[in-house]
Image: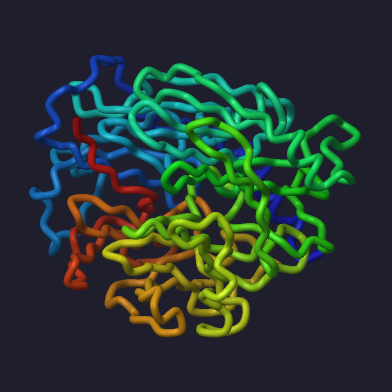
Length: 442
């Protein structure tokens, strides 16, 4: 067993302790949506450095912050307007909305759903609408793909174990759906779809849900054990279903050899990105719970194609060393930016232990034309975290969060412009770790 059972016990103890603690839950009964986003439209989502399930949102004005100051986000409430709508931070925002896939009440992110957040007239974040997503005993990750203001997709296990649901993100109304089970059965006739308890062993849209043009790409994961999202050691491929969006019809399942999964089994972190040409990139952490990890890699589907590009790959271990991992990915200005560990990621331990051991992650810039060459960005390192994707593109700039939980390492936000210049935007106390930066606008 490569993963310690002590981690699961530790999480249980932490959860029990959290029940007995009173959180400073900043709530605002004002549910009048904000209309004018000319001020305080930047929103920083953070997790508590000691308890990842506590998420706070801070509204502020970027032009008012001083990069030479070190802020306390709660004490400096004249600049940072604090709110806690009891959701996790979402890896998508669209116009004046943030979308979260889980409620996060008093330390538990165990309530799935599709929660839409926005600012009220007090500049606080609140849930303005939601779509119910039922569950049995377990809460699988659900990715989200927003195509336009009236078309988006998520994995809806409420209506079927392999069902992808379309909805309108503006009205929050459910639209059509496609059940992938018949096509998966035809692709793999011997697949086991439920365990002895009736829990789903074939997950769709839990690793990947993304689109390019008229094609929607949906991950298909064949689990050996549902409790730990465990993929069999006999599996050597990552599987992706291709769906035509206008007709909502299944086309095929494609596979990439040498990778079991991409990203990490959380809803918050998005392990795919598109460049300006329409190439779709995937980043694999290599993690597979208790079993042996696979090498961490970045691979792609080229623009105009619906098969994996077998002639292109970023080999993380080959470039940075054995058991190095890539945690986050984004494309900006036709370059790829990766968040890579500087030391081996010890898959025998937990993310919390890795943080306590001081494992550092650095940001590197890649030109896809030369995937074996890179540039290290001159900015602070971060701790690893499966829930954090440190990259966001706002105002035609790439914003990069430095997220640290231990010691006096700096937490803050940096930016990169189209000339490749790195700039420190602002810094704050280490008790908060940034998970997302948004800018809301009509």
